[in-house]
Amino acid sequence: MTHEERGLLGGLCRWSLVVGLTLFPARLHAQLLSAISLSFTSIPGSVPLGGAGTNSASVDFGNVSALQPLNGGVSRTVGASSYTVSTDFGVRATKNSLGLLSPNYTLRARLQSAQSLTWRVDGTTLTTTDAIIGTSQPYETSVPHSLSFVVPFSHAAGTVNTVLEITAIAN
Amino acid sequence: MRAGLWVVPFVLTQIGGGFAGQAIDRTDLRSGISLSPSVVMLSGQPGQAHRQTLRLTNHTSRELAFRLEAQDVVAEEGRRTFLAAGERPGSIAATSVFSSRDIVIAPGAVGTVDVTVTLPRGSAIRGVAAIFRGQTVVGNERGVAMTASLGALMTFTLSTDTRIEGSVPEVSEQTDTSNLALAEWVTNVGAEPVVASGAAALLNASGTLVGKVPVEPQRLMPGERLAFKAEYPDLLVPGRYRAIFSLEYDDHAHKVLTRTVEFAVAPDRDDQRDADRRAGVRR
Image (cartoon, rainbow over all chains, first blue to last red; front, side):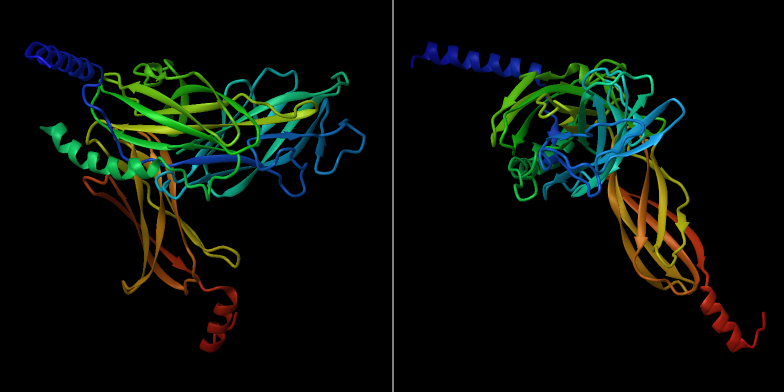
């Protein structure tokens, strides 16, 4: 390598360093890394989840009406103009042994698309915007949550489908 | 010079935590999906940027799709909340740049995404959540399908303004079915995130230490208010007690918040009846 080549290379290195420092003047310093996991679980006495133990589960309420018998694990309350059908599902979040500084987690829920029926988790009405269901949820345990929907008497018979997004964020 | 003083300890900490944290502890995290790191605590100065690699592991037998999103983490009226990028001035989430907005992860594989965030100058926000939103839906032909999302919390400490305030601890008396419990409401009144933890000590009337129970750590974002709780696992004999509730925070300044409360444990009715009988008291 000639003296000129070394000079050119050195200049490029210096410019690269200047550009790098301009973009990242002084890197912030990370202190802690950890991990969080999430899966859905079935709750005894409630509707068994399809896909329990994974991150994609389903709940089949079966046929519901204001008066007819319901599937096992489904409960119903009847009001003046509507009835509410509900069951429980579990959320289990875990952390690895390095997650000492994530004492618990925040749980949120939302609908992935707008629905004609009113859906609730733990009494909180869901929309397509995230709603906080629990603020200090414990790790390493299956936490039961109620899932319900409200059917007005005037609602036409038909299939009810919805997609619920459950989010756990480390605290 | 001040930055240099900060850099040395954090660089050392980052080396130890960083290498260890990249490996997921699979014994705990074999179901569903897992995200690493879940918490990243950063320190630095306004205007700085940080690039963080996030790894999402798909432990299932299905291919899973996710969409990446950043949200600011703030406290409103004492409660932690999450705001869309740009919703509040000084939004950190609005500066976030993901290496990919969408990612598909094969069964058993690990998906990696880098997120770069920059701290706007003058921002009061000290937290951002990087969220992997689940897009794969299974089994909603009839009923409800649920899909899981995971979020990593990144916190930022820019100054030494770490301060918390606590209420007088509340005492829940022991009963036949529950232990004596103490709860202190703590508010982060400083500008920086705080992780506080500690212990509650119980002294009897003569000042002798009767017991000590740990207070589990909790993170408080600026403005956030949380209850710190301690439960004494043994039965306390009747008498007067003083509880000293101490919370430590700020690893560098080693600050301690201490609150005390006095309370009495009354004899239960059977004990009182026996004591009265021995003393010749008729009721």
